[in-house]
Length: 333
Image 1 (cartoon, rainbow, N blue to C red):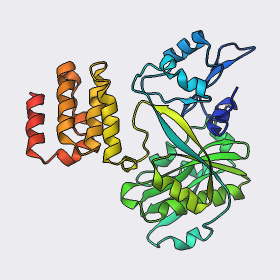
Image 2: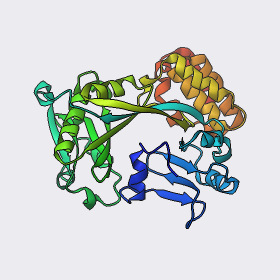
Image 3: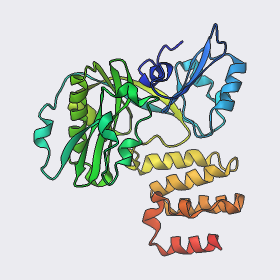
Image 4: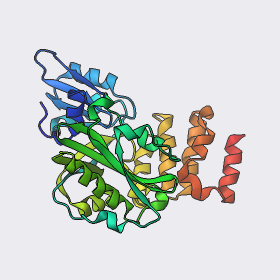
């Protein structure tokens, strides 16, 4: 049934039991429609016109779940299978490692940093300041299944891990990987070094295919991939009820404003849309519009305000402004 999303290795990882997930079909013995729920996506494939099955999908998908459609026909069915009317189409890129373009990566690492590799037998021993970031990454159903693989690499500065590139899933000799660099350590080539190290170790480990996915707005992500030797294979569409970012800077003020306006079209239907619009206006550095939506939120659902929401990072640039302080005092009384 899968025709156009076969680049999503997580689908096969779920089917083979490599990672946890759920597979639903309309008929066990002779399936024609399917919903595959993986740790990173929810994929619909097969016959898109099974109305009963589509209604069941709508019950299964959560309000903030994303969806990847295998065909155009499924894209047209989004309103029938998702309960969040704010769900919106966006684009992603899929890359596959082609040839090494950064083979001397270890020689370029500044002496204040240390590059180390992740293996299962060493995972428990990691005791750095933020080792939990590495340990919590993996979602394998059975860790013993990956004991012979290099699971990635990380770069640390002293006792703190500042960048890591780790394996998301493994199916035979294929893997997909992801990368994270702490905000204060970006633009230092650490991501490129970590990615190159993970690719090199994985290939030496017998891995023949290495995949990489990213949001098309994350220029930094795919620039790193291309610089290390990844080649773009395809662009594909997904649906998301929230801004598709890997970093806040993936979207500029204009794009954040577009998302804010998108949510404002839904205002009055669900209180959460006021909240989301306010947050997007915050990222767009528009204090007045943020306050406007927060005011509507309070009027619609008085007890919805929380300290966590008001401390939202997108409002950080407003915190020292008198207008914002007076507004918060007024709505908090």
